[in-house]
Length: 351
Ligand SMILES: Nc1ncnc2c1ncn2[C@@H]1O[C@H](COP(=O)(O)OP(=O)(O)OP(=O)(O)O)[C@@H](O)[C@H]1O
Ligand SMILES: [Mg+2]
Image 1 (cartoon, protein in one colour):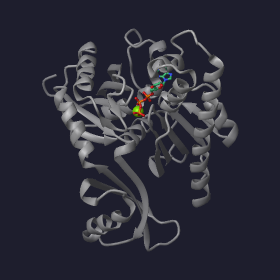
Image 2 (image 1 turned 135 degrees about the horizontal axis):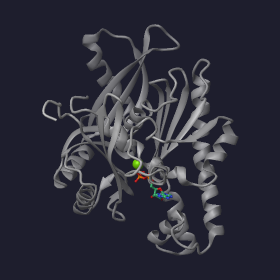
Image 3 (image 1 turned 180 degrees about the horizontal axis):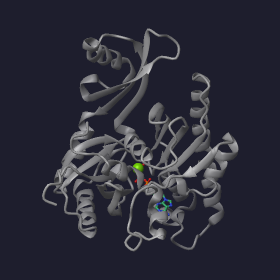
């Protein structure tokens, strides 16, 4: 392809338990899935958002690229949870030239870190519902040392990081390409990973509320390991249902109790949102991440909030070769795939 502009990136979602990689090609007909793969992160190699074992994770990335035969070296990655603070703040409207300094000085009171230790970005969301002199601003602060750590990791893996995104935004990015994400519909995207959860309430393409917390499937695995006195690895295998279950009663109880906690956290966000906004009601909840595998969780939210709850299928609307990516494969990885796909949709020149 002599004249095509080579600005595409490989999306690389470095989760604390699974790394996901995706490569897309944009055509007139739509986005074509070229590559997709997942690889397990060595146990304990990423903890609390920090890369503890650089060589181990870099090696997993290298092996994944090799097994998927990915040649492209330019990647988009993302961070989230422990290293990112996302807040919607309310501030007085100011002239464009004063915006930067106003938001930076406002940010200090919302960010629990030293302002010199974070990179700050923001987006104006629009006028406040309550006063025409005020505006809503989406504030994003990312810890510099963690960004530096991920850049080192990617470089060690022999790749070039071109974009450092935020998990929640990458998820929103792919959601917007999916059919059925209506322009006026208020949807809540929930991603429950192994170590963290991100919540994002959208109206069309505008985010109205974001929240991150440290809930994740590790809660189930850790509790199982304690109660049955088995290793974390054994507990993980048991949870994923790969092996004959030793004591499925205990697993069931833990699963239910953790799912209840997640459900309560989600309800709290939904109720807070609905009581703070005029006539906005969450109409649909879209689940992603390994937490979506937890049996009974989705039904629990549905009955609690009386809304439509769906598991994400981020490949919907993409063009893919059914022989290389059979339906069984797609349904197996759908929950874990969206962030990598959202990153793969980014272009080199994107902000
Ligand atoms: N069938 C399954 N396949 C893969 N993971 C599963 C399955 N069932 C449950 N899980 C759980 O989902 C977790 C992986 O989810 P996910 O890929 O979203 O996490 P992650 O992105 O690595 O974590 P985080 O974003 O919190 O760092 C696993 O650690 C496991 O506990
Ligand atoms: Mg994740």
